Amino acid sequence: MFGKILVPVDLQDIEFSMNALKLALREVSESGGELHLITVLPGFGNSYVSSFLGESEHKAVVKSVAQGLSDYAVKHVGEEVKPVLKVIEGSAPEEINRYVTRAGIDLVIMRAHQRSKLNEFLLGSVSARVVERACCSVMVLKN
Image (cartoon, rainbow, N blue to C red):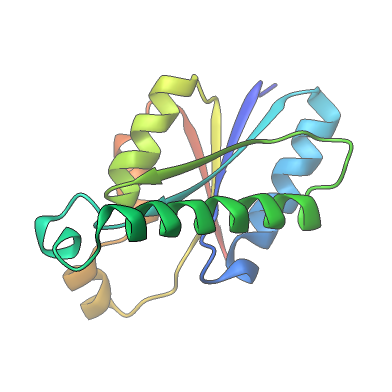
């Protein structure tokens, strides 16, 4: 039913996306679809952050994160599915939705953090902003 499925992965909290990944793998296996795994690095375009990181450090961080995403895929996806892996820089909800449009994603499966109302108001919710702006179906898993 869904040809291309996206699971955003937070490499700082590997377990957080595991249920979303398991559901995506089941759907991809049943439909023969394509799995996309992305992780979004915040702030490297920000002049304040870039003042602390030189070009070589920036490249090293991106390379390290890309290796981490590759290692995650090898460990948790298995050999029968070859996921499309992408490391993107910027605001997580904006970049996820931009990727959805560019890659022609049919379904995003992601977990939602359980935050207090105050934290959600102050920080916003990545999943909520993805849902409200996505041009495809979004499945948000709680717990």
